[in-house]
Image 1 (cartoon, each protein chain N blue to C red):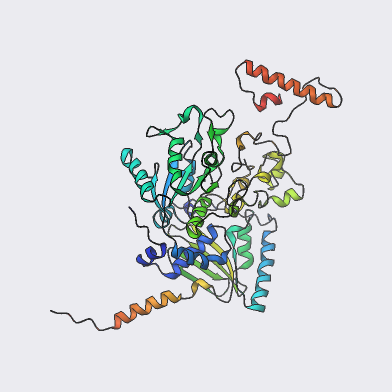
Image 2 (tube, rainbow over the protein chains, first blue to last red):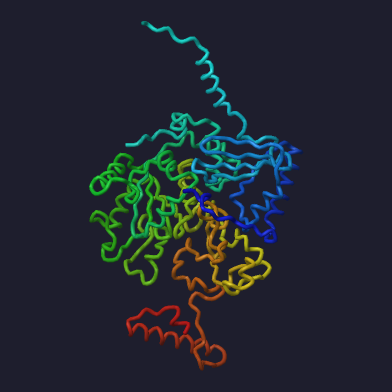
Length: 140
Length: 361
């Protein structure tokens, strides 16, 4: 059973914050400036940050929801959504059991993981070509 | 014997896409506490990584470290065991028993001599020839020395294997020592903690498997990626410490407002571990988030380092003023230490161990 199945609802106290959210938003603003100036993308690993109880939810509220959401299914689901700030994407990767294995903010025009990978494109083309090829003649 | 090919080959055989592999590497980067952009480097290294044979020996321990590992969720234990390592011997997790189990250990040691990874949890009793813990009639000391000879590297999991842990606590009746006290000629990585954080166990394993060789270690042989900072450095209650706001009891207004637990005995300032960021139970929380101070379980001799509820600013074995010893100046210290010495020797005569409480009376 996954921890998600245990019916405990975390009640976030909006008043409680040690300032992590504001600090992180400032960092995101700095990375956005860099993206605009140089085109350099960046990633922030949310699991490496010491959030106080409730601050994670506060960050979600602060970043909000943008125009694009994507669902990916590759060794477990992934939820990818643009926040209300274009260029700021929230990526949550789950494993097959439904546990979060990576939770990050990507500052980029488009999340890298959503692009078709060259290796997969080549393998897909081979599959398509073998389907189109006439069946090999048999001896009988 | 299991397939020892590269991870990429095995994933490709299972029809796993490059994108899925990249996602896996992103999760691995997060797990290994590496910069999030290093997924591509991990993918390149993993593509070449071979699946090594792993022999896991459990000595004087409580199985808490194995319990912790089996709660690892990123990657799952199954994927770690079957995709990344070939776990050839682990007497709690393996199906084989008796002679068959011991044979799988000796077979793996022979076939992969010089290449296998040896994992040890538990301390090693050395008193009276090491008779206090034996497996299949052989002492832990003997088994460790034999297995260490052919190991490429040794990972000591848990505070017992890393530093002696609770079996070594005073008065250490079995003469318990750490792996590094016995083995001197092999690289050893200490993953301390009682138990260690599951994600740290798998993270260090993954790092070793991905990049080979040893990660950067601190002066106690622990990987800096996870033990480089103190709990206090990364604690979300740290701002309250800086503001001088401390909980005085476990149920006062300060405690309810999430103030710093320093005065309630929190050992966060002297404890190096990743609890404050990696957290426990799949990233749910860690002890300080539940309102209890850190016990310092990833540090050597944590069990004997004074009371769990005594502030770090107090000496580990404080001398309290005996009643009526109101003598001025240095004489107080002398009088007190004499009084305490007398208590100690009285306790000795009565065949009782002198405890911290005796000294504080």
